[in-house]
Image 1 (cartoon, rainbow, N blue to C red):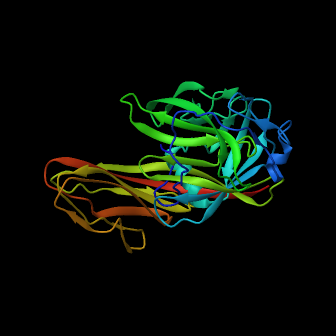
Image 2: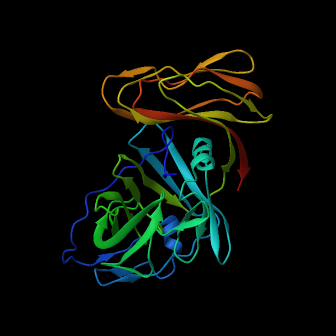
Length: 326
């Protein structure tokens, strides 16, 4: 699923990408994690530069601030394991780990060392095509879509280190619509922002090496999936012991609908789903509510309902989050 995250993450972008123009060269003056990138300190990049994939180390970390949806605070993405072929990237945020377990966020988990490709359902998502240069073009599958990508050199991309040279990358779908925009900044050894045109993403606000602290790893299991319609489907599901949360996802759209989700936990306590909303016009939604992971039988007391035309899926997951130290 997309990189992102209705409850916890979204992402802010820099400016638009246009055709590459002649530019002055720019010096890289990295600090922290960036200063460990061999050959980059004091280097000069211009539109003729060719940049190889960086080497990450355990403890390399990037602080990100989500934008676009919700009011999430910062999170840290940290390299927790590294070998010759791949890295493991994990978040400090339990919510972000939860979304990764449910939706398989492309930049969390296994990252291929040769080109920093992320993975979804064990399939690589090729964010970069190293050696990266002005005009580089390639394609990948991202969120189940065929996406064409093109990089353009920029001398001064905003970063937490100040303006840095790098490459701004734009991805388009088969119909030519812009799908995503992000960058690669050699001084950061990764991107400084990732922005989907649907309006969510993140920006990097800090980078460091030798990070220590707690990071989160989560597992998720689908318990119940319902399809709404003119009627009101109901159902029950059982949550296993030692779960952190129950995640309730409502997704879809209809010509007109009313949302009035209510679920009842094993203690017979009612929990409301996404806000009750009546829509007189065609509308869609994708919302997640996290509830305490009480073990036992739950039931759907009032699922989403709407007149014929369109439909929603209502899915429940149990999620267990583990905190580990680095």
